[in-house]
Amino acid sequence: MQVLSTLRNALAFLLVVSSASLAPPAAAAAETRQLDRPFPAAKRQAIDAAVNQAFAATKAPGVVVGVWVQGEGAYVAAKGFADIKSKQPMRSSYYFRIGSITKTFTVTVLLQLADEKKVSLDDPVSKYVDFVPNGENITLRELANMTSGLYNYTEDDAWVKLAFSDFGRRWKPRELIDVGISHPPYFAPGTGFHYSNTNTVLLGMIIEKVTNNWIHDVFADRIFKPLHLRHTVWPAGAAWPGPHASGVTEQTLSGARADATNRNPSWAFTAGELISTMGDLRIWVQSYTNGTLVSPEMQKQRLTWVTFPPNTSEKRYGLGIGEDHGWLGHTGELPGYNTAAYYLPEMKATIVVMVNSDIAVKGANPAPTIAKAVAKVVSPNNVPE
Image (cartoon, rainbow, N blue to C red):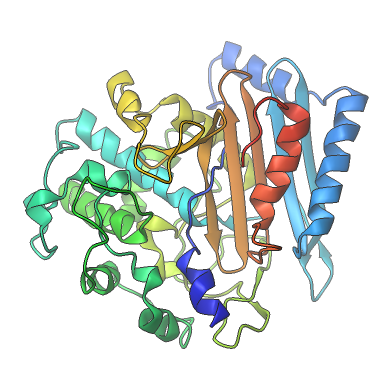
């Protein structure tokens, strides 16, 4: 079924980045104001034309796009509809589900705990949980960089059918892990690469155990509050915190298009449950790609790249972060939503794209497609795949 193959990649890694400053001292605040000045007319028109063309080629009802390049200017636009049924116009302030960008938060907390000597990246999983087969030979690092070999629970056809039979179900993290570990591993730990949501869900469970706190409080205390991410939320079930985009998907048992707005995202846990806005992602991507909340040593670990195929020197994965032709970040997808956020250090450039559809066209997801079109204008020598 189409839905089965689609959900296998529902939290799939692509790059995504966004930029902004923390709410800070005068110099940083001045830099933010500089970033918010519009691009010169010609550049602004070129970006807008690229966005329009790429957006038209997708099946997405609406999109928000933010582009910031230090010393050059900014571009922010909202196009199409937030709700295709009511024809409510899209707004750049609306909330979206951000899917796998959640992984960047989860791994940042892991790195913070390593900084505090509460964990080591090379600790075995078995030090914290006793139910993972071969857990004594799987490290926290291998969970974070997708080299553990653990089976991806969202690739289990029976689980997908069950999940898509009850969109309101509240999944427990252990239930998700149990699906993954019921399958043989893809390979021995540390001998290959396979993007698996099981890895990051397991990290979330371990973080809760180490901190003796619920993950939503951990994220709030360690990331949301320090960075003033006032519009990034761990949702209570299917609830939304405010005005939001309504998402459309073809991830249904029949493959027919449907509204995915109010599905319970608990099936994604720390691999993909968060909600955010373009403005907050701008702040977040600049923070974690520059390591503002971790030590230089932990940032070095984050940016240590996996060399197993399909990773290459131009497109590769680290600890909960990707690099694609110089751009750092992550993408996110949940049924109804697709997000891309990238940061290019050499230009101090940021792109954030949020789309209220996850429907691919000719195998290309909408948000990365639009981000790539923007990058061709902003950084023609650094264009993500």
